[in-house]
Amino acid sequence: MRRHGGSATKPAEPGEAIKLRAMSDRLSAVDASFIYLEDQATPMHVGGVAVFRRPRGGFDYDELVRMIEQRLDLIPRYRQKVQSVPGHLARPVWVDDAGFDLTYHVRRSALPRPGNDDQLHDLVARLMSRPLDPTRPLWETYLVEGLAQSRFAIVTKTHLALVDGVGTIDIGQLILDTSPQVGHHSDGAWIPQRPPTSTKLLLDAITDAVQRPRELVENARAAAGDLFSSTLVKRIADTAGGLVTAIGTASTAPSGPLNVRISPQRRFTVARTSLDDFKAIRSEHNCTVNDAVLATLAGALRTWLLSRGRNVTSSTTLRALVPLAVREDEDDETVPGMLGNMVTAKLVDLPVGEPNAVVRLHHVSHAMRVHNASASKVAAGALRRMSGFAPPTLHSLGARAAGSFSRRIFNVVITNVPGPQEPLYAGNAKMMEMFPVVPLVRNQALAIGVTSYDGGVYFGLNGDRGAMSDVDNLARMVEESLEELLSTVRV
View 1 (spheres, rainbow, N blue to C red):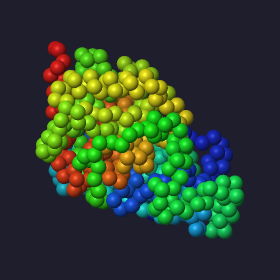
View 2 (cartoon, rainbow, N blue to C red; view 1 turned 120 degrees about the vertical axis):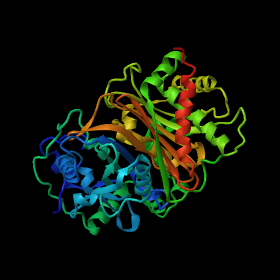
View 3 (cartoon, rainbow, N blue to C red; view 1 turned 180 degrees about the vertical axis):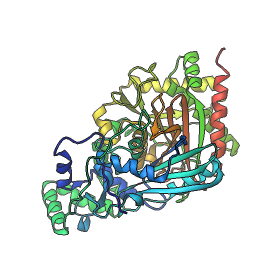
View 4 (cartoon, rainbow, N blue to C red; view 1 turned 90 degrees about the horizontal axis):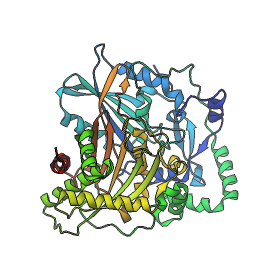
């Protein structure tokens, strides 16, 4: 049976949902850029892997479908698709998908029992390698069964054009509650609006062109794949507001093995660490938890470069683009979500040439303090135009920023998002772990997402299958690098 559903960060006021559906919305310049940038080697979707303990009463595919179906009216965009304007006279528009089939988007997969974590990561890599169907709403969710130790996983894929953080959040947020069996229930069936005709799209495009004639040329060039030579990049920067001003004048990043031509295939792996360990490093060395995370990654990347026989000197660096949310009270690790926080966008030269773990940490801490002193904080309004606030959504911020700039100014994107320090549930199933999957962009072989949740700090490493064939080794090196920093903490 065909199921219908829809999408928004809060229930609509009376009449609001009808207003949203009454007219099609044109994609913003930023959102449209991710449609134009996508190709077989660089699918533009952000992902998430949540691992759950199977509850006593079980959790199956039908329950997941029902859960999403009951909540889709909160985010109407998830039942809309992208429709191009004839002749590319204007940016595409969002229209209701009259043939929306929830069971196409919510899928079922299984590992051979007893499934292990390596098999799950291989499956995630294959799922993330495949672009989303551009003729349908740009998201998918997978229930992965067969994990050992009475576990299952939910894997999400959401296009960067879809998650704007204003009215549309990541699908992973939709299914999670702070208590078992708590959540929104839809109060009615969804009736799709008839899509605009080609004539209506053309008339609207002509009206826009009269008001903004420059866009007529920009959209045609961008749709033809000439994005980087057009002035659309500048307009993306204008839309991004303060976020891009923090990185727009940076010098060219050092060359290295992380910036190579990539393939359509991916490898995915994870590293698991404890938030208490990072807090201990923070207390010992008077730094932030984020400083300790970046220093840990710097140590891991140093070991990885040496394992590849790269020439690493005392001055060797790798530049990371680090969009991160900062709590107003950094000592408060208990506040769930990201609402009310400021956001910074930073370029950080990771000191991978430094052999001493404490000195690496001091270099990173100093670099982050310099950024803070230069007033690089981004207003919450600017962030909302780029992404969102809750952990699954905020990881798209790094990917959206990386989409236009990675070839010039940084080597790797690292998204670090503090998550809730209390358990979350899908139905009666408690979430045990959550790993972000940050997409790669052109000439970028590695992207790292970091999320803290319920006492753990979880690293998701997404790499090109050819260029990062040893990404599993890098994940192990992350854990070893943390141990090295922990050894400097006095008991």
